[in-house]
Length: 557
Image 1 (cartoon, one colour):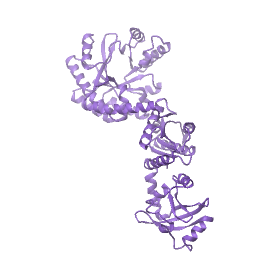
Image 2 (tube, helix red, strand yellow):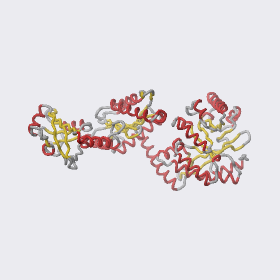
Image 3 (cartoon, rainbow, N blue to C red):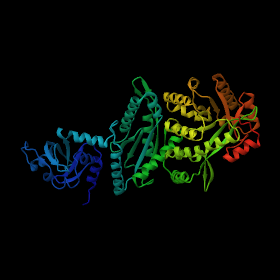
Image 4 (cartoon, rainbow, N blue to C red):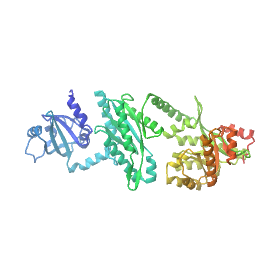
């Protein structure tokens, strides 16, 4: 049966309406019902409700009118009364029906379950609505998404998918508590609904992730205008009790059918675009593009190759010495991850760790490298009488998982190494991510016997007051400052200030990325004598590292 344009418009208008709606012709023949009707009435369309309304909906015995009278009245004025029907499981349902005419072409019926069915409706709400915000949840969103695609295919329409992730939400949740975080999420949900059209789909997928379907869009300019407005609205401060919370959001956009023709493709592409927006500093939006698509394909290839690399033990430790310039003494060894890729050669950590972390392989790779590193360290202790610690770089995610340190201790025990043989390195950015929990975790690590190094110092936003509280033994001056001290007075001042700050706090300093004698001389003049970098040795495999120690007569104990 062909569908008239008028009926098509009605379907579009009522499909996502929160009330249970069914539409009939003037003779009372069923034409269509919306999603809320199917969910709340638990109806199987068209089996449960096909044909004339009188066939599947019975008027209450209290009614003095029959269906002919009801339909006649509804053509001219609103009619309301009680009726009953059966759902797809043949359970009896009692409903209040409100029936009215629309443009003298259709009868629109609104169905409200009576009190006996309230529990069923509440359960439906739990199944399809996000319990915190009342927005559609992932389950309902998937159904709505499929419907949007089918409508767009049939009517040759375009729509946009906006993947929204809040910036700095985790910090608010950790520092102010979950109640404040929930209040923020509620406000964001309200702002999304107020900014968007009623016909647009808004859902919360979980955590601080929201997704929007902007249907029936005409051009990219419309998408950009609405997205920019959403970003402005979300950026406005949120008050919760005595707290004023300030977040932004990163938005990724994919468009049907340009960037995909399935729900999976469109959502995945919008997600990838969102990560690009976040990587560029957040509080911005990014369209999915051909170049981003190529990046996605490259990442998927790396994901498969990472799994193969683990099975074939392609991940190995490389070692870089930390040297005291005053006496040519080895003060430590930094362990760095490398991937012996069969086609691309030796790959540094930056080329694979972000992907490994995202797909949950980081700990397996870490352990594979650690087993080899500890074995080499134990051999050097016996063979060379080496007694300096091995520094391990720990990601923020690993840092807060006790499993990480349990596995380190197990491997140390199997290689007969004590905790003073290992130094834990965390980046300065880790300080910004967990608030008070950071101090507790650092204290736990120190009590276990590990020393702690703060890596990449100067690139984050550590306050002096906060740094005073940290149980940190060493700070590493970031290579970006060391690299430019030959020709940048600004970086010279920064490096000198970091060294003086560390001296004041009683913390040792290590300069990383030292490549020239001129850089080393400036550092020594300012009382930083412990360094690492290409001036001494690049990171090398275990065999070459041992050869370096012997050939350069490095003091190792």
